[in-house]
Amino acid sequence: MTPPNQAPVAAGPLIDARAQLAGAVEHLGVSDGVHRMLSISRREMAVSVPLRRDDGSTAVYEGFRVQHNFSRGPAKGGLRFSTAVDLDEVRALAMWMTWKCALVDVPYGGAKGGVSIEPRDHSQAELERVTRRYTSEILPIIGPDVDIPAPDIGTDERTMAWIMDTYSAAVGHTVPGVVTGKPISLGGSLGRASATSRGVAHVALMAMTSRGIDPVGATAAVQGFGKVGRDAARFLSEAGVRVVAVSDVDGAIWAGDGLGITHLGDHADSAGTVAGFDGAESIDPASVLTLDVDVAVPAAVEGVITAANADRIQARILVEGANGPTTNEADAILADKDILVVPDILANAGGVIVSYFEWVQSNQAYQWREREVQERLEERMERAWHAVVDYAGAHRMSYREAATALAVQRVIEAHDLRGLYP
Ligand SMILES: NC(=O)c1ccc[n+]([C@@H]2O[C@H](COP(=O)([O-])OP(=O)(O)OC[C@H]3O[C@@H](n4cnc5c(N)ncnc54)[C@H](O)[C@@H]3O)[C@@H](O)[C@H]2O)c1
Image (cartoon, rainbow, N blue to C red; front, side):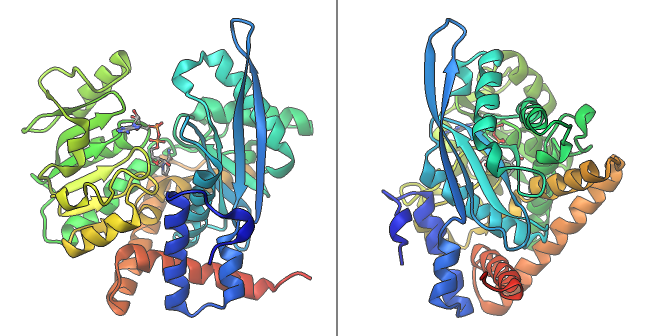
């Protein structure tokens, strides 16, 4: 079933997201009407974002904010700056946010935003102007009780500070709860910056244990060395896992004895890329996910494991740090190879969990201790992990199917209890 007014133009994440929903709907026996409601975004906004460049010229970018669902609470989701952004991608990411929030039981619906811009081609001053203009365009549909953005690809805590300031200036008072992933000094939560990575590493360790793999001495490869990949590699390495390969958009490196992640981070800070790190060999970036390792962690962009390379994946466990890294076709191939896939809506949910903690702290103007944040994060990740493992076992389905079914069921329950207005 394809909603006529939101028909995707080509294969891609939206097709996959809707197919995953269709699978859950069939399993749960949901009515056509509710299925249709969950397939279509609740609200979408497309804006043009004009930018006065530092040289005086004008550039114009496309921006989007998509709110997929509000049944369980305000919409929540990241803001992405990337040239790959388009409306269908943002729709898919918003739908996955709805399932993620429901799966880890935070009181939000799903949203996502994006601007089709290459941030590396712009100065900080230009990025500030883009962020403020985009924020002022989407201002009517965001707010601490409506839709709360957070960092994603190409954005960071600085971006969140600009959004918060632009929103606060418009409403006439400071509203820290309008974004999460803020700098600590503006009401950000201790532990938020590394929360997604901490969660990724935590489920990776649980997955290893469940497959009888001792993390100490096990091997891992991580694609992406940004906000998620970098700390995921660090946490895995701190747990005794040998992280033998890492890549970013500019290159990939390998060291059989394991990469020194702290030093690699210092190198990436100064060089702007992992490439050229002393003591590591340069390898083909495309090979990072197909190396013979225990755990592969895609933590960059979607659609990197496809029918074209899935049969070459050798890892025993794939932990999706990124959103949508595995296409549905690839998923079927990995299942045939008995590779355990820990799906994105479970694996990378640490970010939204601590975003929720940050929102609670912002709304209460009270800061929790970092230890408290970490313990609560790990407890929620474990609860979601066990729910997915048990459901998958009981219904003989993959972890992705189980996670999606559990989440869809919770969203439908909230929808049914609230009823349909009018
Ligand atoms: N930041 C969060 O809290 C968060 C939470 C949940 C999920 N995610 C997801 O994690 C993924 C990464 O997000 P991030 O916040 O770390 O972004 P980021 O912009 O901080 O980092 C992205 C990294 O991926 C690399 N990269 C980009 N294209 C690549 C390619 N084709 N091959 C190899 N590396 C490539 C970049 O060089 C960079 O190192 C995204 O899918 C995002 O939606 C992020």
